[in-house]
Length: 469
Length: 100
Image (tube, rainbow over all chains, first blue to last red; front, side):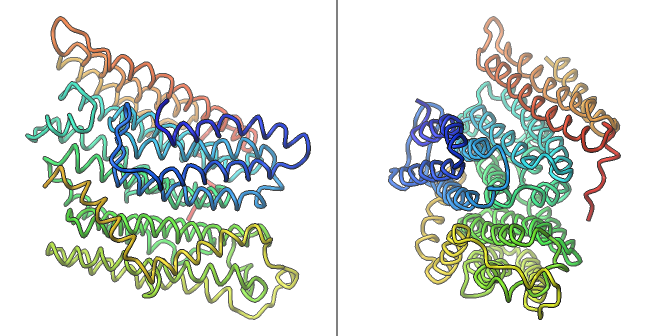
């Protein structure tokens, strides 16, 4: 017995290969996808029924952990529904679903953990399964190269977290978050050294400016549902870890200013590099870096309003970027290209996919009735509240720059059809359109009625900052 | 105690040096192993912080981190075998097709 949800998901992860073996015997591998979706849905139901806070063995589950777990499971359900059709031309499908569940278990364990050791074990579980999932299509050269790059950078980062952990253990004699925050009240040179090691490790995973180089390769080479998961939630787990570890352990040192400076560099790099990009998935991957910059800007204000904005943006970005990657997956499935120059006029042949893609792109650029606007506005208001108005101005400038490359996608999709192969393209299969349409509806719903989400994020932010204030 | 921290920092620096300068993929993996071992060494050194008493928590951390390092290496070697099949070499300078 570890923790109720993790136990349930581990059960599904272990039984999926057995079921998969039977499904491959009767030539119906999509049954695995249905099984996985049911498992994730039961887990989501259990999280929604939870009464916070809970303490079980090495886990302490508060409102913030619950908030993150809901995001992970929700996007996981959509990704596994989408994969049923998307992966029908591949082999090794049961293993794909097993790794998908293991990645979700890793993320949930990392957000539930109450001590550094448990956090590290689940963090590595998430990392190892994501390396394997990026290299899932092993017969092509691109995923292998991207996965190797990702593996080397990310495991060097994990080793750096372990080293920082050992220094913290040397100072405190314990690894529990609450105990450490009680002991580490006076900053000294070793606290600074440990914080550098830990933040470098977390920064690699969350793609902060000088450590972001692996992200565009890994996220564009992975299969589309996995790109949605990686961009939507795995990177955000790094942001969560920065919040949790920064505010609970390193509250005695001034790390918020450094994060503020890095967030500006992160946004500008993420928004200026894709301006000339023609590969649609690579463009979306770069825009993930920019959005990480917005979240870090929200965190660096250090107030409840800023953290509310950052947490809302984590949730909204999971929906928006998940939808954008799934749409590019449908186009990749039908057209078998990622180059935008070969997609001219595809919007006229695939109306539903294109409409949902446009909704997600408008939300990503921060257009008013959609959900991205609300969270970006909250972050900008928070930066004005703490007299960091330059941060707010940077976010506004970046939103404008980002609209430029989103509109390029729009232009390419709405042009008259000239290419011969576009004329034969049909709309994607219905099973792929279900997650697309439901995510688009969620974007509109959370854009028009953000109150519930905002209150939840506010109480989660309050939970996080209670130890500091 | 200081000499142990010195040693593990030097070991960490060797690991980073290995990752930055070496071009063979297997050597990069060895660099990561060195980084993880530096951290493990630190844990073991700190486990007898209080004299006459050995804390068991770092020993369990080290045991599990050795296991995790082994699984990372296993995954890395699988990817490396496929990379060798695609490129016919283990030189990372050849893995430069992803750009931009």
